[in-house]
Image (cartoon, rainbow, N blue to C red; front, side, top):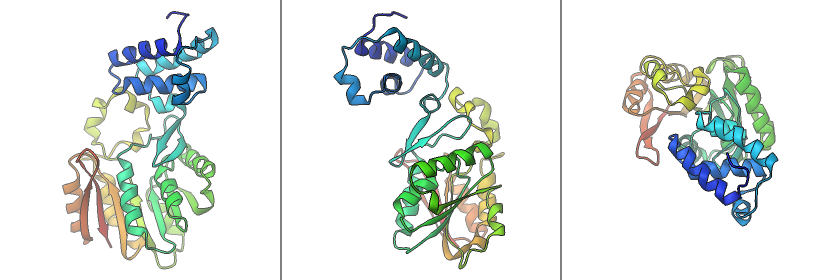
Length: 287
């Protein structure tokens, strides 16, 4: 790599380099890597487009670029990600929040907006993204966030603290709804919300390289990808008030099957919602 780069020259070269390695949004990622290295925001990057980089800056930038080119997730390199207007810390192997999960959050917010002080369970909270987004937008909500991974649970607590909602989110260690069994929740929950693992086990070897850096437990949804949806359909009602909401994210092509599972367990008002790409992404039902 040359040693006499300006910001704009390096940005252009990096964009081409990442594009050649199959990165989907090479310009955007090149900008973020340079912003991270130089301590600038995007506007600052272009205001200083003709500034030469010093050797120390180039030395910091090169290993980050090489990691990204080898398929290491950008969010892990930056140590942060954005979700529903919230900045979250993220590190391997904790599951990285996806934009399509915002549809799940929007659906829950719309259906709980008239509840005074809703009680919600976020099952499999991961980095805490769903619980934190709900707490930020439902100011009277109290949320029980469960997680089986100790690393994810610790990170979720840190993210809640950083975003000023830790006093209203109760983090519980354990598998799905099991941690709630020891609690007494007067009247039951208003909603159980989950983005469970939903990739069929047989599809895991064919995932993109960058996804393979994430915790397999957060990805593997069993033979047909609906193992955890089945468990939530079977187990959630006992924790919900009458008419309470169950909201789950699903994988591509799974919505119809998950809706059938819910109907088989006697859930009412089953409906599906599409994400911005037109894929049925969320399944909702009432107890």
